[in-house]
View: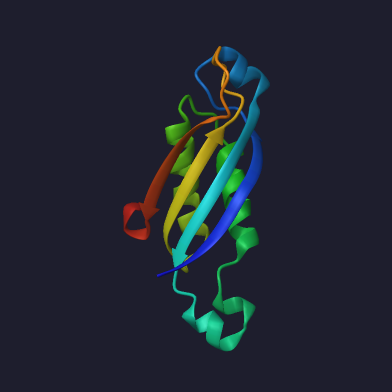
Length: 123
């Protein structure tokens, strides 16, 4: 299985348990790993034989912004499912959803969840 990486996709959205998070929103950062077969694209050098990175990013941004969830676990899961629906060549997606501005009274870089979903997991 081959991999495509999309690192550091910034999205402004309204996820979180605290009322301020739902009201004011915050920045989220996504690292996306796409498992797929790239052998055909490697042979043909044709765009239509690979994964459309723009479609993947568009699906991720839309999934992150169209609804508001309490948990980043839910936001990550919905985003991974949206990516699988948007790009049929992707067999598995691993998504790390970072929340660098979580309202926690500590010094930290970010909190994050990482999930993996496969095509067979989506309904």
